Image (cartoon, rainbow over all chains, first blue to last red; front, side, top):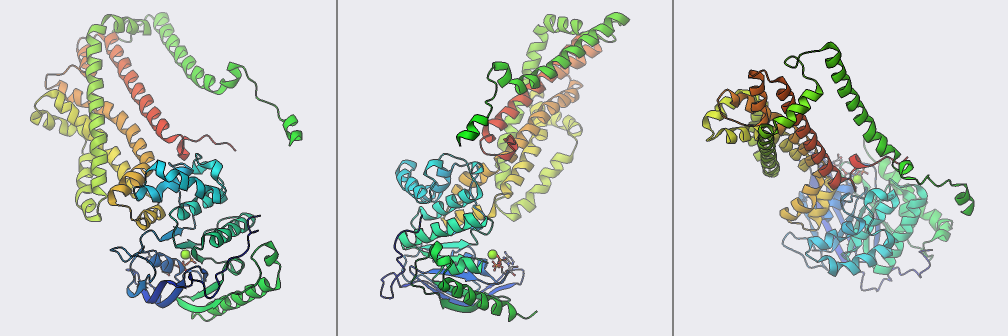
Length: 274
Length: 279
Ligand SMILES: Nc1ncnc2c1ncn2[C@@H]1O[C@H](COP(=O)(O)OP(=O)(O)OP(=O)(O)O)[C@@H](O)[C@H]1O
Ligand SMILES: [Mg+2]
């Protein structure tokens, strides 16, 4: 129902196709001595939907957190060519993060949780109200503004989390295995919601997942990482002329995409030294 | 949908039916207490036990009525000391907890001191406090404060340190200031811990106020319930001793009820501990 709009996958000449974030030879060594990332380079362009896959512990979360500025790089740089950056070198207000858990404040209502990013910027509640209600409507939760998180299902909590990420109208949405804890049907629904939001808003998404099927369904670019130390193993586009909906799930394009991603993943895991 | 609706039996509507659980939960303990009091009076009357050994409930009630003039100021003094000590302990406990969690080093440096204060038996330092404090009232207040303060502090420290890491990350991501993170995230998320500290601290403040007054009693001054209790003992006025005891337990019950209510009031909408299971 949510995928009836025409797909707006950016054409090559689109102005959105400009580098948004550029990681150059980033390494990350934790104080424990773990080298989580080594010499990782990745450029993500505006409007892309990039899925990040790789074996467990290969540094996907670390990469995402570093892009978000949650933790410093050990060596290397991260640039934001098309954003205004603040004193910490971060594009202020341009990034949002969705964690694997909904990460809601249980003492706040749905409204209060979505209000948080705006509240921290000093926007008054009355000034933010319309924006919040609109965002809640886009994730289908307009009727639940006054509910507390404990009254919601897992899928609904995740929607609140997505609404909170979108309310600041960020350029880049980072999602770290956001739907891993949900059942398959809810997951597919939320996948469709995310795709619709991506099309409607032109937002850029970096999406970490363990699911080959999810990545093949959602993304127009796949980055497979290799473990110990974490780095990019394969990086390729997924092209299709079809719109991504229930129809696409049964198509030959989708089957081929799944196979390709799967092979790359097996390759990345198999190439590991034990 | 309508099939289900017709099969659904609406709950009974009378006042008693609706509040059956609550009524039973209130009535049963009250009945048990009344029964025990009656039994007590019965044993006293049947065995004709003299008042100076064990007074019956009637004698205690009588003393409560006749000695109200001496007992009520004492009750008021003990209540005041307990409440003031609890209030100070809340301010001090929360304040110092916030200070302690500012950095690992501050905690390492100061936490042991608070533990030493806690593990030293209060009766042992009471005489010392009595010497240094300007008045006995102040000494009692300090004793009760020291005892009530620690559970509030340690619960608060625990609460402030148990904040969801991803929420902290989220606040960082949105560039929240230290002050915003404290106010909007750390304090609300440690509210359940604070409430536990409050309930424990409230009970301990009363106990400490009484124990400290026992210790102070030997030093002469004082007019709280504990002093009246000792005084009644010296004079072998056992009914009045029991009357003072009854007032102390009532005060304890009231403190417990108030702190429990406060806890319920602030947590019931969102916290698991205050939820009724519905499955
Ligand atoms: N805070 C930390 N301190 C020390 N080591 C860490 C820390 N966080 C992650 N690591 C290590 O860095 C490596 C990469 O971890 P990361 O969480 O990024 O992996 P991941 O690809 O997200 O794994 P998963 O798919 O299981 O989520 C792991 O070996 C992990 O043990
Ligand atoms: Mg991870």
